[in-house]
Length: 212
Image (tube, rainbow, N blue to C red; front, top):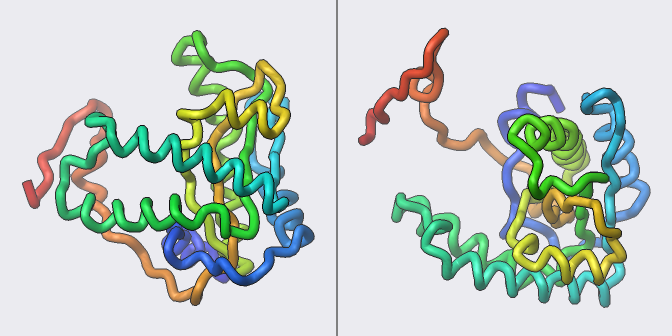
């Protein structure tokens, strides 16, 4: 797969995850080896990746995810102000919640640090040391016919998830990523606002949306 194709067609995948096809550990290990080549702050490599393929553990993680999802759905600050966009994404989000326990593998990257109480500089440094690796991981999955989605609602049950998975104090969970082969590989570039609306040169300038 050409790099530009991978960059423009690696989508958040929920409804098109193949729940019936096993995911070999060796394939995911290949993706992780590529992901670990990503840049990270001072090459400290503070990451650890908890991969979950045991059905019983997956089911327990999924229960916590659904609890968090229900809480997130009820929060007014989580509602999309665009009704059309919400109408497209909400059914997909709900579908993943209902079927998460059926997804062959879950990945929960963690960072060896506790970001609560850190200033903006330290938080940015820590996130900047793992986001490139996670994105590389998702690109590597895409190249091998697998898909994923960056989800965070289980973090509303962060402590329970840490206890379930044996994650020690002092670690921060980055997100939860379902991993499965995709139903078809014909993903297309998404609709995005033009570059001119979301960028400015030298000074910040907010450009009104043409549709607004």
